[in-house]
Amino acid sequence: EAMQRQLQGFNPQDVSNMVWAFATADVHADKLFWVVANDAVHRQLRGFKPQNISNMIWAFATAGMRSEKLFGMVANEAMQRQLRGFNPQGLSNMVWA
Image 1 (cartoon, rainbow, N blue to C red):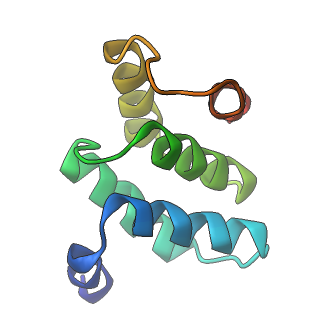
Image 2: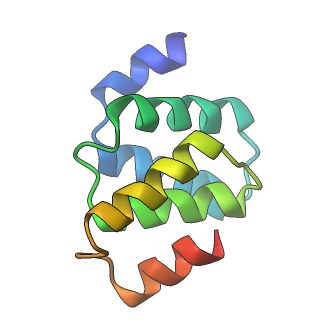
């Protein structure tokens, strides 16, 4: 819960960059990933740009973390946006994840 409260000061790019960094460095932080997943779902991805979304989902997959709610919400969000704003690399990362 303390970790969840601390995320309130983070914007979507901060959240995305944080999990990306942990995944890239191969640092296992399961609790952090679950808190980020819950936070992103709670925010309903409001404020997340396509790059934030694709980086975050890539980080989850790279870290071996899977949140059905988050992944489902990301898929729905991408479809609602009609994939606008997602570049080819970002789309590839999301499909791979």
